[in-house]
Length: 354
Ligand code: PMP
Image (cartoon, rainbow, N blue to C red; front, side, top):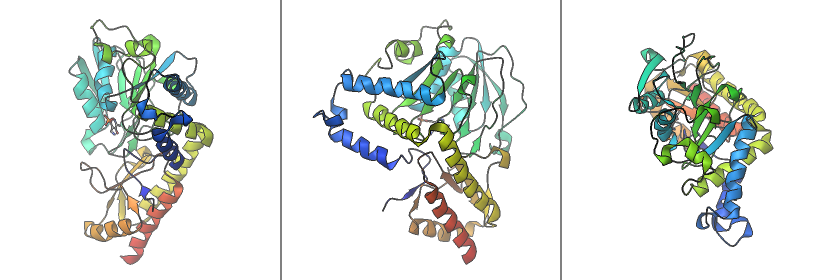
């Protein structure tokens, strides 16, 4: 039986995508070759890469607006470093909203001067700071749109006098935004887009080529753009499966339709957290993530019973991150509302039992 998959990442993908990807591993498009045993320079794969890059820009509404989409490796973690290498000349600002922002800061500090513009560390990152000033002498401002571990999400982005760089690893393609407000977006594929192994970078081309350092080729966005995102052998399976997921998203009605579905799931989840006296939400209400709902049991003594009930109901991946504890229900694009219903039912059954 297929489990209800609330994993924070790698995470649930549409069933039809898994089936198509599995088929392609055996025989891609009846070519008599597996997707993962053919040259990345073959027409078949060059087409996959081109289509994937174009569909990213189409879905984000960035076609013809000076942006390039790249499928790189090294995870979002490499982007912590690469963004700074490519964009940091004098000084950059970071908004610290959690563990991933902190890691981004730490890596960028190896490249140049970083200022923490504002932080929500004072409350274990359970909220999103607002109303802060962004200095105008920064090379860029770095944000984390969705804090996977803490379950907070930026709802309204600051208007800045400087370029905006955003780690969207855990909410890319999940909600309608004016993506032109960002100059660089990056996201590991393994939540809303595909399997682990590739990282999406969407960058405004005129942002590049302005730093004086000699950037190693493999870390240089301009080199990747010049090579059509095939500077070296790309992660062919991850790129193809990402393309399949993006095609699925387009067929479902694109970001507008998926946002509506995501909001329904989140509303259902948070109303149970709020109405059920056995549970407490972790994140500040106005900053709650539609992707990762974090919550705790009011009485830890109920944990063994609740965990056994979750297991019995086939609910998987809801354990909270060690730095928050409790539970985290990740509700990425491919998670059906039926899975949230199943989880909510177990929560209310616990209330009836207690
Ligand atoms: N940023 C965010 C918001 C994340 O959730 C994660 C991890 N899932 C990362 C960065 C690190 O990603 P990766 O493991 O791909 O390096």
